[in-house]
Amino acid sequence: MTPRRSLILLALFPLGAGAVVLAQSHARGDRHPAPPSSSGNIVVALCDGETTAEIAGVKEGETPTSAQAREVADRLMTAWRQKNPAARWEEVPVRLAQAERAGGTPEGQAGAPPAGPQGEVQGGHTYGAFSERDQRIWAAETDKFVREGRRVFHDAKALGSTIAVSCDMCHPDGANTHPETYPKFQVQLGRVALLRDMINWCIQNPTRGKPLVEDDPRLKAIEAYILAQRKGTPLEYGKH
Amino acid sequence: MSVQEKDFWTERGMTPMQRMQTVAGLDNGLQSRFEVGAAGREWLKKDLEKIDVKTPLVVFSHSPLYKYYRPWNFWTEDADEVQAILRPFEHVTVLHGHTHQLLTNRIDNIYFHGMLSTAWPWPYAPEGLPKLTIQQNRADPFDQFDGCGDGSLELTGSGLANALYNLWDRNPVTVRASYLASSGAQDAPPRTKLPSY
Image (tube, rainbow over all chains, first blue to last red; front, top):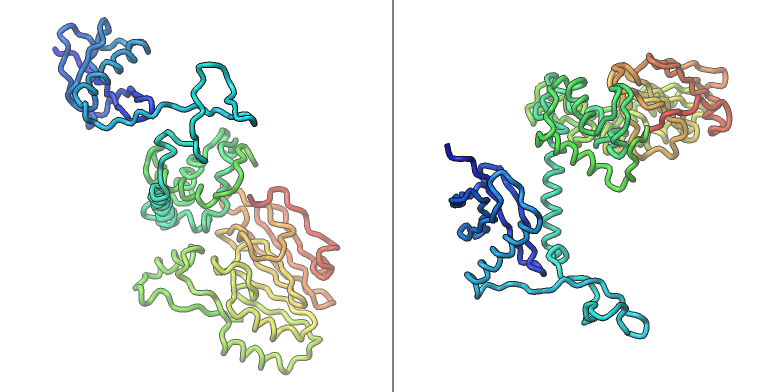
């Protein structure tokens, strides 16, 4: 019987220091077959779908040390660079914040990063390089999610009510849902509850439906809508 | 006082159940705002012409005859005009339904008392009243009839009314005429222990 192989995917991001993220995936749809090792060592595949490397002395089912993982990641990175000499690779070094003194002399000892032109806004990282357009897209996606929550909140059938009652009938505009007070001890339940516990309580009781499982998209969307309705309200968990 | 609304159901082909579901949802915006309407106001004006202004008036209405919160239709669109008709009278008491909560308001000579509901208590609107002084304790969602109740008006010799809010699952609350007449200085009803969030 062939032993089941787990696959370690290496995701290489063109970041400043050539950061390497090691992630293990068990999702069937994400599995990329890697050639087996004759010695039974773990085989690590690069995200190009071609390049692979073994971790010497670490068998399938064992966990490599951080140093071993780092070593194989560097080896794969080197291999990828050799295969793709013309690929554009942003070699921006990580820059540490380096405050200048009033006299203009950089603070710190020899070996500190040189104080070059910094510009007015901190940069040098993908996360800070998103544009306003990106943010508009994110806002639109978030609004879409919230709107879906509003739809379910107002739709007895969608949330599974058996008596045509929907959330908005007691909570117009999400009123009196106070998501900012959770988690809190819900005295009627005799335990600490999250907002989703109360949503499910309402679905079961006033609307006489079946409780939604925790990762049900409807439950997530309702949560999103309720939270969106209380934007700006300070969080005050445990409040009664 | 009869209030009217515009037909939102015929053109949409709604069943009676769908129509009631729509009305039960305050924030869907499908229901038009209530209004007494020109004919209703004309009738009221004529009806009151023959009455001395010192006569205490008690007006019954479905919706509050003032503008509380339009997005939820806690509202009467032509309330200002209706109040103008009632203004010459010394003491006017309006008893209204629709808002499903302990709710009292005074605008000059007109004292408004909302009735509790026998089902479906509603939260206070986020804005609209000049100042929310004493709220009803918030209802326990695990208690089916909490926040529900009935009530009565006791007309006093002064022509004003004490309003009794007979909450079924809690102690009753009386909002006395003297509380309103003194703008909150006297005879305050029991204060709120658990206000709205």
